Amino acid sequence: MQLHFRSLRLSLVSALLMGTLAAHAQSAPVAAHVNAPPVDEAARQTDAKEALNAELFYEILVGEMASGQGDLVNAIALMQEAARRANSEQLYQRVAELALQSRNGERALAAAQEWKQAFPRSRDANRFVLQILIALNRVSDTVQPLQQEINSTPAAGKPAAFLGIAQLYSRVSDKALAAAVVEQALAKELRNPTTGAAAWATVGHLRITAGQKSLALDALRQAHKISPESGATALLALELMEAGLPEAEFQVQAYLQHQPSAAIRMAYARVLMGYGRSDTARQQLDILTNENPEFTDAWIALADLQLQNNELEAAQRSLQQFIPLAEQVPDSGVRQAGLNQAYLMQANIALQLRDEKSAVQWLDKIAGGQNILNVQSLRATILARQGKLAQARALIRAVPTQTTEQERLKRRAEVRLLREADAPQEAYLLQRTLLDQSPDDNDIAYDTALLAEKAGKFDTAERLLRDIIERQPDYQHAYNALGYALVERNERLDEAKALIQKALEMSPKDPYIMDSLGWVEFKLGNNAQALTLLENAYGLRDDVEIGAHLGEVLWQQGQTTRARAIWKRALDREPGNETLLETLKRLGVQP
Image (cartoon, rainbow, N blue to C red; front, side, top):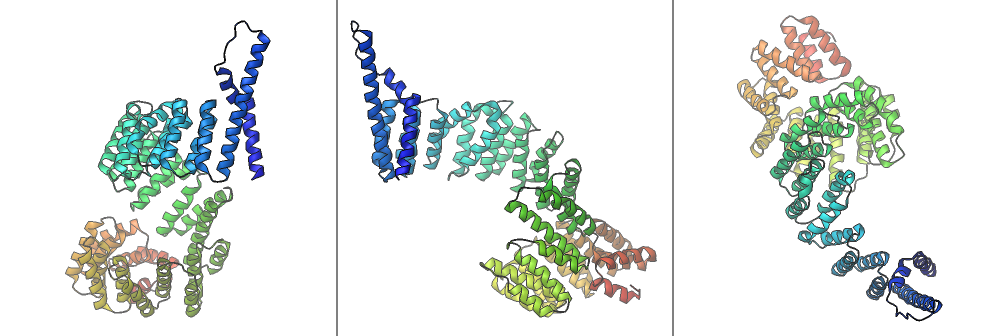
């Protein structure tokens, strides 16, 4: 405590000596004696200054002592009196800080307002008033201080200031009022050709926060009129797309025609991935990696898309670009998380290529415990391939959990292990426990239906899929799964076709649904339609099972050379795929 007061005293003495308080003393009224000798007048002024400085110093010191002892009421009163006497902005700020410490909002506001009244042009005082008003939820009263803050900001710094304003008001409880107040305060900026786009983007952001999506889209259009090349406008458009308004994409595309930043192109690619538009996202990532090969995040996002599309070698090359770039990033949790993700992807690729040794080496590189379930799941896969299924299951079960959701993820990992280990009965029974816990979860019900089909429980699978369709009529995967199951059993093919067509109407570019429709057309004897659909599906997704179906149609039409080439490619990727092996065996084709 003594050291605290000593350092405080030194800083205050320093302020006195630098003139903040002395300047006030010099301007204080002093009785004039015209006929008095000059030396006596100087002496009187010196005595008055010293007396005033001493009194102020005492008030400040006692005030700080009271503050240190927790007596903030007296500390504020003493410091406030000192601030008034000295007309010192430094002391007014100290009063406001003490008032904030007292956790009395009205007292803090009064202190900040008095500071602002004494120093009307002080940005610090105005900011204190603005922030306290927002904290007190007096949003309507913030128009004037917000306008003052905007007017005090240099033109070059206004776009960044607008971002700060959006963040500040996003915490207000009445989001619609916040948007309206900010729009009012920004009225002049909204009409300014230089700052208008960024200002409208700020208003649009707050409208999204308030749930006013259509009004936010109007703000985007206003921003676009002023500056279609504005990064702020593009960011608002991306936020609207994330909020479920794909019609905002026009602004992103307009922005990309100018000189787009790599960060915004990357953000656009991520939004496209969220929409399931992998091809368009891939185009953006290809541009980004060509124009900005040092942009680290683009490489791992590209690798993720390539891995999803079974382009294993391409994904490996992208990861080989990402890892050395990520290693150059300053040591941080973010860097390690990115590297862990890359190592995990490399391990996954190695497992798909049946290279268990490399997979283990990649897994050994992963640091930290956040990926423990994913890591142990891959290690369990390696054990299961070695015939050690019981040990593999034990490895997953040993992963610690703290929440119900983590426990559910762990159980799903074990189900996946059992399915891949060709243990459908055990997988189905374990999956049923998940369904029993969440009987109305359509995703869990869908996975249960697929496992029931694998386990030979056809009636159960059909009932589960029909229940999903009843609960969620737009769940296209349930229509496709039910239709495909009927095709595989060669039952009710016309009904199967109708179900699959319904699914394709909902998702016309889904290669798996195209494959199902092609397969049912083949079963119905419509070979030409089947070939067209399967060619399209295979072009969209180089998948082993789609390849197996396409190869069979080609084989039946006498295109045996191409059929063998497709099957060979599929066998190289997944030599144990059941659909592929059953197809080759049935047709009498040697692998």
